Length: 111
Length: 116
Image (cartoon, rainbow over all chains, first blue to last red):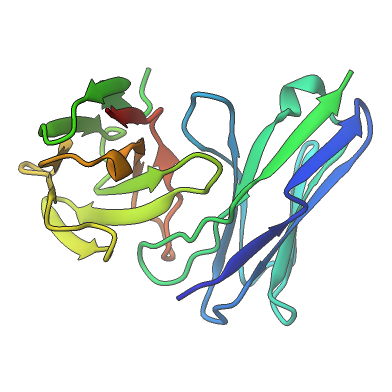
C-alpha cells in the first residue's frame, strides 16, 4: 500500500512569514495530490489540490508544487495569519476512491 | 448549510453496546466515504459507496462494523459490541463525479465516539 510521510510534524512561524510542508509518497500510480486543513473539533477541509499533469497550482496565499519524479509534493503558505494555525494533511490518491493521509503537520502562527 | 452533515457529533457508550452513526452527503454527490481518525493520526479509509452500492471495504472494517446507503442518499455506520479500541472520530466524506478519478472529497464534522 501507499506509504505517506509528512515533514515537519510541527512548524511554528511568525505572522507574515511563509510556511512550507513537504509530503513524500511511495505509490508511483498516485495521480491526485490534495492538501487538507483540520481545525480542532472539525473535519478536514480541502484547501488545494493538484493532479499529476500539472507541476504547480496557486490559490491566493496557498500553493502546491509537485515533483512526480521524486515522489513528493509541497504546500506553501505565504503571508501567514493566525487563522492559518491548524493541522495540515496531505492525502495522495490513486484509482477511484482511496486517499492515503499523512500523519499531519501542526502549524502554529505566532502573532 | 449545504455541506456534509453527521449525527450525532458526540457519542459516549459502554463497552459491548451497539452504536449507529448517520451521514448526509452534499446533495447530488453520488460517492460517500467513511474514514476513522484516532488522536494524532490522519484519517484512515474504511469503506465507500457509489450510489447505493458498497464498492470497497478496508481490512480495518471488522465484521462488527456494517455500513449501508439504502437509497443512495444518506448512509449509516453501525458498530456492534463496541470495544475501547473503537474510540475515535468517524468521518464521512462525499464527492461528485468529475472528469478524472480520484474525485475531490469533502468531509463532514465527524462523530466522536468514546467507549468506556
